[in-house]
Amino acid sequence: MKSELKDFRLDGKVAIVTGGNRGIGRACALALARAGAKLAIVGRDVAKLEETTKEISELGRRVLSIRADITNLRDIEEMVKKVLSFFGQIDILVNNAGMVIQEVALDVTEKSWDATMNVNLKGLFFCTQKVASYMITQKRGKIINISSILGQVGLPEHAVYCASKGGVELLTKVLALEWGKYYINVNAVSPSFTRTEMATHVLENKAKLKSILNRTPLYRLGEPVDIAAAVVYLASPASDYVTGHVLLVDGGWTAQ
Image (cartoon, rainbow, N blue to C red):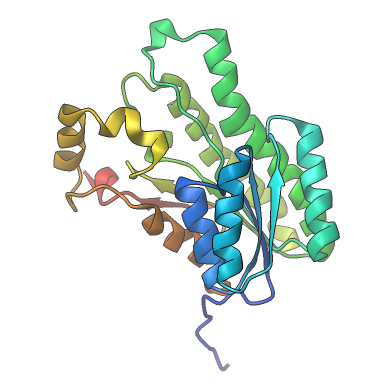
């Protein structure tokens, strides 16, 4: 039986990236566009959305900018409708939108718990549910959840964030089991500390930064493009036999 190595091209595919207007999401959107995909960029910051949309347009790719709050189910439904109306299909969903509040467990309030869970877990789930409902009809799709190594290891002052990312990783496995029969691949990418705006509260602390570098075998922080490369792989035909997997992109952090 002849076998051919599958490639990483995404020509003709349509990808949605939530939180695609900055940081890891922006890097993922640009990487997917360079691989040939058409993009729907979702976020709340209109100015940042416009910047990323312009960058993708300059790559010669069709792109749709959508201002939406993924904690609002009506916004999620409208997002899916807009993408289908504009492109006529959805092939890839990258659930990147996320947030973190740094506080010790005894100081966690209901407000901060709900805010974090609503974005990191509830919003991610319902985006996935609505998109998967369409993917099931076309019998194909790639869903990639951006998690964190803090879904697998603990970090003081991040109880709620760790809980939310642990939920993301187990949810990834369950959805892979339920939707495999529809040829939908569901995977997650778990970065370690990456140089983004969201990590500023940690990276500006010189003592913490030194501790992070000493704990990382490759002795550097992750860059958004490191995560984007993993996302392109999981979105591409090269990963067609990969599902229910959590791909660690952590510089060796969890190897110790």
